[in-house]
Image (cartoon, rainbow, N blue to C red; front, side, top):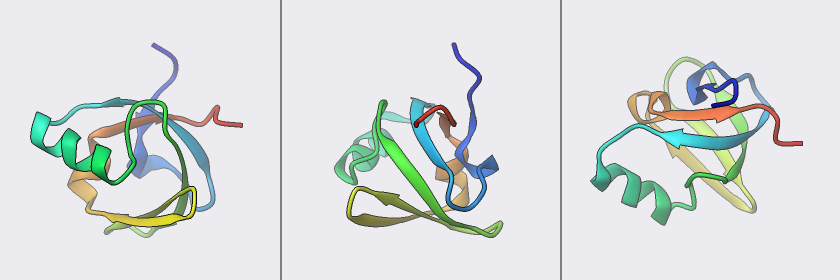
Length: 78
């Protein structure tokens, strides 16, 4: 697999590709409902050590830290 890191390590305004989601099936289904799945491109709008705010197209999404740690991304989006 490519060089992937948890979503929580990304800096503000970084564009990333979702490569892997390491959580239970129920959480993965909820993330898919929010538009976050493998292959999604996200922009990090806020990462201050607590929750994270992400942009997915024209949608703003807030994720808790524990869920964001289970999403592995690569910064090769653009």
